[in-house]
Image (cartoon, rainbow, N blue to C red; front, side, top):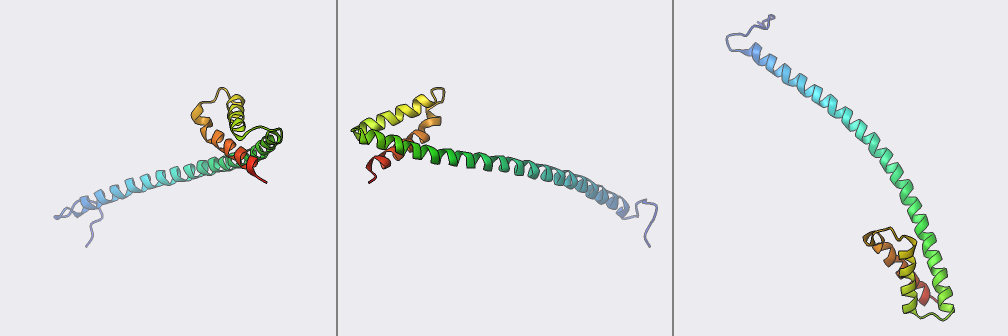
Length: 125
């Protein structure tokens, strides 16, 4: 027969039940907090990703426009008689002068891309 007064039986089962119930209650409270944290972080993550997608799209659009502009600039220089080596120097100077406050490490990839686009445009048919 089961005891209803939560006093331990001779084998201590009531106190063991209390300990298990306390552990379960703590685990439940922790799970509730973690669920709340997960929902909040997921919402923040979705907001961040949304802003990231907008920024990534804007960067891709600007880079495409830049590539086109670099091609026009390079073809104009080529048609005016500029040597490829001179165009490379002019393109590097263009990137550096457009953002003089930027660190070289921030510009390195963009500068490399601009030079590559210029070389491609120079030797395109």
